[in-house]
Length: 407
Image 1: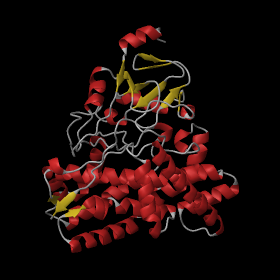
Image 2: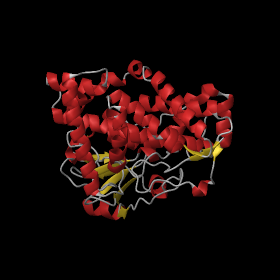
Image 3: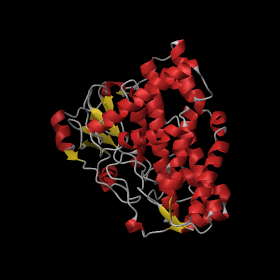
């Protein structure tokens, strides 16, 4: 174990304020790039919360922190740790705040809905919805905003179908999610949206106990009835899945479309080699900086050395999957988009116990969106110069505000 003293650590690793400026397009955050290159384990302060935190950026160090039980998510509860958002996204009972074995119990309640076989049953419905949305877009004619016509409504429809949310309630879900997953609306508005959304799911799960259906909400309601979950835990799981799945895929898939439209040789290759699409999606997942800053942190429960730096018990640690995906010790030419990249163990869906449960669903939806666009519109292109494309401000998950195209 290292013998670095606190004063030594402060001198070697000064706290740097990370403003997290809004970035355009797929620009990689220069602060993150600098930390990966010059100080892979550093100390930072983010715009909200108190104190400072360690930021871990290298691939192997990120994997270590996110899988070692000495770094706890549960310990974050009740601590106003430094972070990007003015609020915590999950409810306190959510799986995101849990450590094993509690975390394992919570995930088990919904794991059946996210098996490959279960998710493949969603593909025909997703393809049908995509076709209907593109029919309407084509009928309206160019120019058209893909965020309005495809990348926004499709992920919302798919996760709502899986959850059991009626179609007439989708605008409400979209509004709550947009407020909740932004740092720009302020804490009061975000907390209000979270409370309203939680109240919706309390009522919905109560109804599903009496009138179950073939949906995830009914499974959660059944788990509550059996005593496997409390109502608060089931509501927290439903809220987190509904909000994060719709919003994340909305932005990630639109980032993929933007990447292809700004890399025309890559897009043309997919037209010639449609069988390359699954591998291309993995590279797009690695290459695209899909969020701003970092997500939920962890607390060290004892002294642990990471990357040659001693992190003391009680200190906050943030891990960056984005910088891990650009680590040159793992990925050759990491700043290049390379569809021939065969060794691609990216961490875009996380690592360890909190690996994203919806990763396969996100891949399925991205595949449906890209396949549908490429097949239907052989001359698809941006309707405006890249300098005029508006990007969401103060967003936690990065993505375009609008994505105008012609064909």
